[in-house]
Image (cartoon, rainbow, N blue to C red; front, side, top):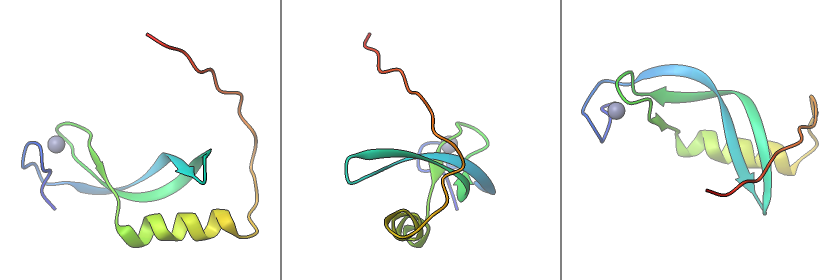
Length: 73
Ligand SMILES: [Zn+2]
């Protein structure tokens, strides 16, 4: 597909996505995305996002927990 910001052709990659669901944050590894080689913008298919939600709402294995700092500029 073409990036909506600069019309560069995106490439399919596996990325680590920060994902919010029902007020909680998750870090999801190995997510397929279309990534723009120019600006780095990521595009996800709706079916991929739905699959993440379904996986998180069901039984799933947690690889590890992270401490996250919340800061303000
Ligand atoms: Zn771009």
